[in-house]
Length: 101
Image (cartoon, rainbow, N blue to C red):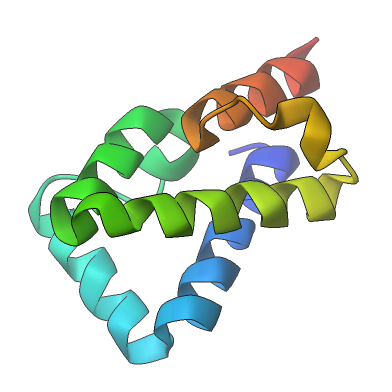
């Protein structure tokens, strides 16, 4: 995992911890793992990661998704208006491609 990918994963961890708390975050990650979704999927398969969150939270996953986007933008100093129409998965893909190019 690249440094950029690790920072993106850290943003997700931070949001989950702040929104859900440590105990609930761990429970969600265990549930995701049982569904075959690992922490590396946050950056390697972000669509799959978000699908897993939707299966747990339903439409409430959208709140987490917006918080993930905001935190990633804050960390990387990206204007949120420039990514307003992107999903979290699309933002992660864009950030990964930017780091490779």
